[in-house]
Image (cartoon, rainbow, N blue to C red; front, side, top):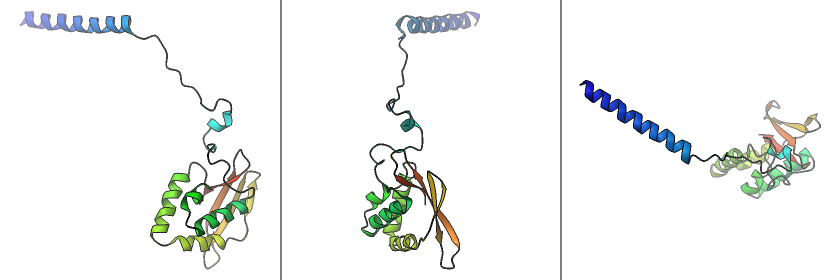
Length: 157
């Protein structure tokens, strides 16, 4: 019994030793480098900044962005409507708009959006439109942000 345990320990040591030596001799000394693809525009690599393909969609004012969204929804162009949302929300809102369209409730959303009268600027790059119900109470606030290209995007709906 003593002999078999000794044999197992010797074999295990030889296998582990050969493995470590192999890694040491054959190991690649190169390091993995991660490069920022937006190195010319450091602000674009931060979260919350639009990707280039959609950064030019939106209005020059919050009201214009809201009107563009309403026009796209009236044409049942959900792809265009999704482009007016910030990059973080685009996929989620596209899915939600599709659900409303399938449930034939897109008209209700358009009516609610058309009923928005005034909004309020919180600072130079943030704006909010209150959404009122039938009784005139605020049920939601549509928030917009100005992106680095100067266009307003919907950041919450």
